[in-house]
Length: 476
Image 1 (cartoon, helix red, strand yellow):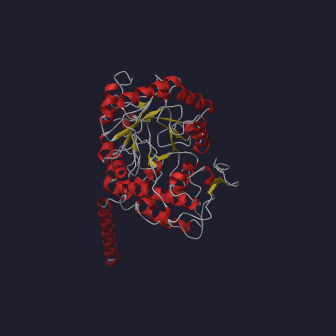
Image 2 (cartoon, helix red, strand yellow):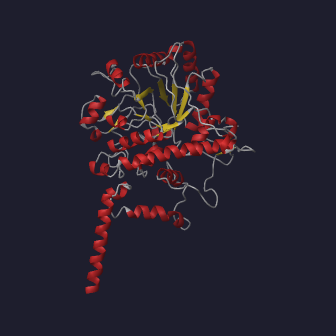
Image 3 (tube, one colour):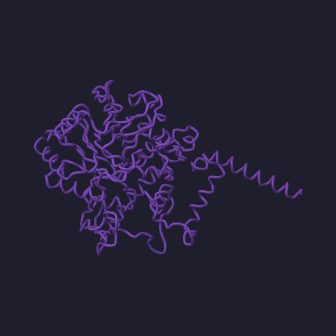
């Protein structure tokens, strides 16, 4: 009996020691928020690859992001080697065509920024932007994301040399804290730049444009998570701080209109873009989800006829669903996927002679080097990701983004859960992810015979007949 008591006391002491360690360490959010029991997740994650040969689901079947994709991001963000052994586990729908004689390391060149905005002529802006990276952080609003998550993204973006888009929730102090370049998004409710009646406030727009870190503005028509519907932020997440930033009542659900009340056609869109650019002096883009192809021809024809109406960039967001809370029918069934939309947009832009005037940003589940390299081949000048950087922050795909109870604190509204996310640690992971992804995209480019990622072209990628999901028969 004495031996059993001693063993019990030892076990309790060990558990207590583990509990104290878990709550004090800062590297693992799950362990800080769920001490002791959180170790079961890491045990399952570590030994899953061995156990799945007997009973578990394979790594490539999870949705919306499978374990292979998430594991690559987790390892990369932590600075761990992502080399694989014994061949590939994927069944790709596309493949890159390697050159017979690849590019030697001493033959590689630096990727050259493609300027966004013009300095002279109709539609010119005072401060064109030369982004330092072809891969950047897509829009995620403060409120949808916790303050700790936005702070970590801002710091990591600065260290990684990427821009950070605000999402439609307005410019928060946390977006500026790290010193990164910022893209201010203007959503359908015009949060952050609205007057008391919900219309565009030119004075607020000038205030935000005065921040030197704010490099561009983005007019959001739609996003992949919910094309045809505005943003949704539950009432529980609309704190006094968020209400002040957005210019809305505290404690009431923040539901944006399904479109801008003052933008009902292409001409009004062009006039709004020109107005924002003249007020701010900075490049202005438009974010949308691809629908009717005729819209592209009409839009680009108007840009040619009225150069002042021309946006400096367009961000085409795939209809695969995104970070925001959304009705399932919209997330699942509305909007062309990026694999179909991007080639259509790039071809239409070039056909209208706007290749050097309008830059294309691509987004929509482009979270790994292969997807980003594919997008560059298909005509994207820049690629941005939201969910990829959420995984870098520690997101475990718990699918509780809209509930306020995200276990990793990324989208949580619970102070106890937010406390588990340490911005200092997670900002380093954001940096690692951004840098390593760019390095591996460059590696693909060199294999294809291009001296840098800017040299990727459609002929460098091809579809594979057994593939599924929209990639097949795209490319050279």
